[in-house]
Length: 486
Picture: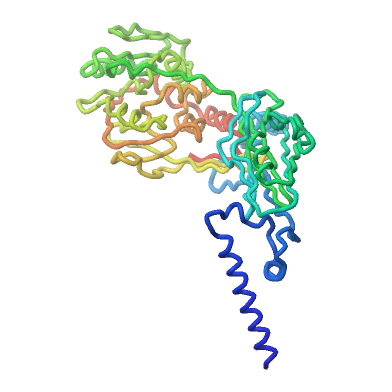
């Protein structure tokens, strides 16, 4: 019995000792007194030597993501219409293009790095950016630990060179100057940190957008931090001018329906007599469109909806554009200024969608990347994500109705695929997924004229089945898709 009580008493004393040990080091100089080693609990109690260590260095990365195969439940197989004779060669070309796409988009830099627990190392965790092949001081490097007889740290990188500035009398304690591996040692912690404050990084490769990983270690502690290598870009600004006419251009893609187009233009001029209107027209027999401040571009016949969008957008010189169909009509309540107010208040927005009559068509895109071989899975779901703060009736989405205001430079970067001639709307937002920040807003209304489609127009408006099948095959390659669902 006494033996049990004695063991219990010793255990209590050990816990009290540990608690006092902990309190001693939690003061205003915490980071300078934190032990440089993670000790076993028994050693913490029975061995006060701060240099004792028997733990294994944790694996903190970098870890590379390997997406798993996605599931195509109730979705169309994107490659189902590829002929068996062509499938193997098409897959080979697609795999090579996807590999190059990952390089161009910096996928190799998408790595997971963990922060180790209780490290005495101080280092930049985010925001360290360098210009390619330019020497730059690494901010914040330091060691915060207990007194030792000797201190030694090392740094290593893959895409650059490391050095300590103004090394004179310190040459014997700095090894690896202007190399990818740098070692610094000193018997003084203050001196060590002074040397660390002068460590520089110079990338040895020229790239406008990539990343290096720096490994910083001391004894059994190691951390990894990113170095962003970025060529600084030049701003491309649009002068908003003094009124709506210098802020927005109205864009229209026209095909055959000149009666409706002229009615649309007349309705725009009621409240916006001076705003520029750009018409991209691929009608079979073009007719003249007259009016002030109208640019009418004649295209080869039946080039398609997206080709016309690209042409119209290429001629925009204003910060924003408003997209409308040629059979829409401005109402008394149609106010372009409201779109601008929202986009000016939230500069991150790229597209703001409205309502056609009472139709506020908006959707989300559920996308799984899938693995490199099979491709991804995408499906369109009607609905919203979350409200736009400060704007009642506005919600974040991935796609909107065919009446929207776009930020000119952002939408140009995504563009409209000219291979989609007759069927395409969601496809633009698929291409812009992750690139365009989109919202839909209630109350931003435009009208729709009475539909008077001619047989000739309907022939082009409703494509044959083969067009839809070809479009699916196009998605299979272009968007690296395994399956798709609208």
